[in-house]
Image (cartoon, rainbow, N blue to C red; front, side, top):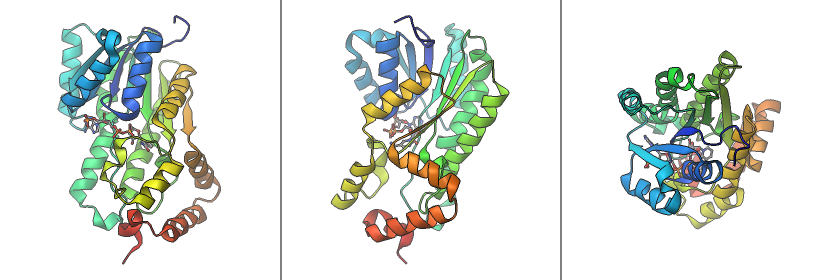
Amino acid sequence: MGRDWMDNKTVIITGASGGMGKGVAEKLIKEHGCTVIGIARSEEKMKKVVEELGDYADKFSYQLFDVAVEQNWLDFVTYLNENNIKPDVLINNAGILPKFDRFQNYTVEYIKKAMDINFYSAVYSIHALLPILLESDSPAIINIDSSAALMTLAGTSVYSASKAALKSLSEALREELRGKCYVGIVCPGFTKTDIFRDQDSADAKAQKMLNMVSTSCDRMVKMIMNDIKTKKPLGVHGFDAAFMNYFGRVMPVQGGRLFSAVMKMSKLPLFDGVFKD
Ligand SMILES: NC(=O)c1ccc[n+]([C@@H]2O[C@H](COP(=O)([O-])OP(=O)(O)OC[C@H]3O[C@@H](n4cnc5c(N)ncnc54)[C@H](OP(=O)(O)O)[C@@H]3O)[C@@H](O)[C@H]2O)c1
């Protein structure tokens, strides 16, 4: 300890009750002596995080709120000020993966909900917290984006739109805050977490396919930690993410068609809503 810029910092991380957020929170605490404030909705899951932290639990506290509601962020700032907590780092990680489906099958209400959680949560958190972060000696904002921001596949219109919006926002901030605040974007590919709970992955073939292309959560967390440690401007992780990065740049139109053909050929129920008439 004592060698990395984020050692002993105070970090706010959304979605710390599970998946990658939980993994990153644990590493920041155990390997970097950070004080972490985790945000999510489920107290049950947060209590488990505290329990698993064991001797390190005093370095972790949590706030239970929906990141998609702006007022919650304003109240959170009041809480920080009242308790004289001065965060250095904000990690926007909370997110949902809508079921793979055709655009027209999503209700407008659902699309707004997904945008609120995956995109507007970062708008609200950064807007509310940036003035406080900038008081730190080494402020940082890290947005956990997705390979879906690098290339859009059929069936992912809403998720990709939310993550592309997050990427654009982050890229502008990176330039606007250059020299004042580290802004990092992380684009993971499929990673083994509970995020697939809404997909039709009970199907054994789909599960096998997802497992084949997915990176383990531990491995992804290690790569995210390395991005943060080295203040990487953009991290693209997982072989599927590397593919999408390549095809998104080199053949943005034909690439989408190619992926559609592969998805159709797989005949997985997972993609039924997208391709079956
Ligand atoms: N797993 C993947 O394949 C993958 C790939 C690329 C990008 N990503 C991105 O990586 C991030 C983390 O994903 P993950 O796979 O670790 O997901 P996960 O296991 O489902 O965890 C999501 C976390 O976000 C929290 N959360 C969700 N909605 C929330 C809300 N409205 N308000 C507050 N907290 C909320 C959840 O906590 P509560 O349920 O307690 O609220 C949970 O802690 C997401 O932004 C996701 O889009 C994931």
